[in-house]
Amino acid sequence: MSKIINVQKVVVPIDFSENSRLIAESAAVVAGKFGAALHLIFIVHNFEDYSGFLMPQMSMPKLEHDLMEGAEQKMADFTNEMRDYCRDCGVSSVQWRVVNGDIGEGIVDFADEIRADMIIMGTHGYKGLEKIVFGSIADKVVRSAACPVLTINPYTCCAE
Image (cartoon, one colour):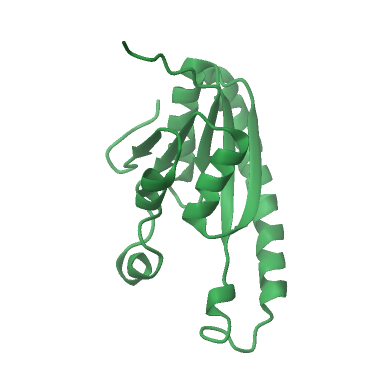
């Protein structure tokens, strides 16, 4: 006997890369099929682990505050640009949040907090040395999330 999935909340991590809009639009199409709410999230990476290593003279609390402020404004603008598209797709509501912390853990924690039914995210992101340092965020989320995770390769898909 199969269980019917009732998707009411979809989490979409945003990184403001050139592919963010494509991933968000693809997620809106999926969420719209269920009449679900879309929850966009941006995680400001926690740099405390690197203080004294990368930028000894910089004030970490000031840097994080400035990053949070900038990210909140960028997320508000991004969400406003997405609202009409989401409404046209049948998305019930669009909400956003910016948090500070480990990116993979932050996505999973947010999904758990709001009791998300699905996470939709891109497989793009870090390459080379950055991937070695940060690892694959999509891989971390797929392995840790309590809900289904749909990953999208933005280089092989199109949202229409």
